[in-house]
Amino acid sequence: MMRYYLRLAVRSFTATPGLTALTISAIALGVAVSVVTFSIHHLLSGDPIWWKADRLYAVTMDNYPINLPPEMHVPNVSLGPNQLTYMDATRLYASKIPERKVIMYRAEGVVSGGTADRFPERVTTRVTTADFFPIFDVPFRYGGPWTADADRNGESVIVLSYEQNARLFGGTNSVGRVIRWNDRPRTIVGVLDRWAPLPRYYDMANGSVTPPEDTYVPWGAGFGLPTSISATMQCMGPEAHFNIRTSECIWVPMWVELRDAASRARMQALIDNYWHDQRAAGRFPRPMNNRLTSVDRWLDQNGVLSSESNLLVSVGLAFFGVCLLNVAGLLLSKFLSRAAIAGIRRALGASRREIFLQHLIEAVVLAVLGALIGLVVAQYCLHGAYAWFENLRSESPSAAHVQFDTASLLWSLGLAALAALGGGLYPAWRAGRLPPAMYLKSQ
Image 1: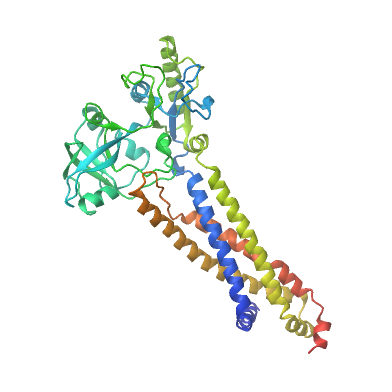
Image 2 (image 1 turned 90 degrees about the horizontal axis):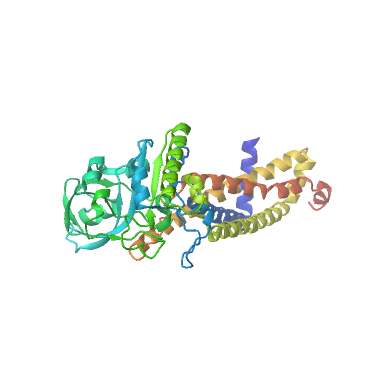
């Protein structure tokens, strides 16, 4: 019977090609818009490292003064700052409790060398500890990260991003080569694979949608060299800028990986005890507000999901609703135009249920065809957006990486196909309720 209904659907398509094409186009357009909007929304609001949801935590301590300076724009004072001072970060980093730990900051440098015969160019650099790469599951294409000894000794090594390696060496394996970073020779120990987490959760203070850095150097290399610190910095007190190592400037993000609840409790106790010691020494004037924040809560607290993204989804849903109304109207017109044929089938013994199923199968076929076309259109739109943002990367350091989100795409496609099928339920039901007698008289 199903094969028979499919043959009837194909005959209907050829009998009314105009209505068929309009119906498929309406479904495809609605699917494409919903997939693109939901994919971008999911990309911006999702947890980019969900598999470590119960292990990865941002470390923060509230060292704000009792009365914040008027030039400091803090959206939610109760959460405290989202970075640490250099002094607090380095002292907490000495703890042996975390399985992995990282402190870091963003800087700028100048890179020269390579085989591409390029002029020296300014690059963004992340000065960080060795655990940055395993704690955030950063993929490597060639080589690997430096060791903890390189952090302590400030060894002359460097890791390149995939894009920077392509610019300097044409994408070939450059491990072991020597380039100059800030006019100092550095040996390349690793080259990252394509990696652009969005949102960029590990350093929210410097932008949630900015691309990752071009180069990475050990923590010990940051001081004593002509490095331009480009981290977002909040300072309290008139003496703050004289020595950023000992001042109350907050500019160092810190993350820890804790294997279980027990280690998390121990780390929290360590931070609280450190706070009490510093409070006794005259620091931390506000009530204790030390936090270990998971990635999902971290994104929520930092307001990653903007109102523009929510508006985009609302517009997409509204547009999809309009498409569904059009689909329902087109299908109703299409089915009613063949009411005489349905009347003859009823007179020959077909039940209302069989007439309903016949038209519902036709609606399903149209929905599947429209959804497949919409999927292809959405895929090209997302790849086009990705290419556009890649072109903007060289012009704007804040350009985001729009990536092809397969999971979100499949989920949106299923939702769109189900909704498109729903657009055919009423027309199919209406076709099955038509009285056959009036159409038999006209034959």
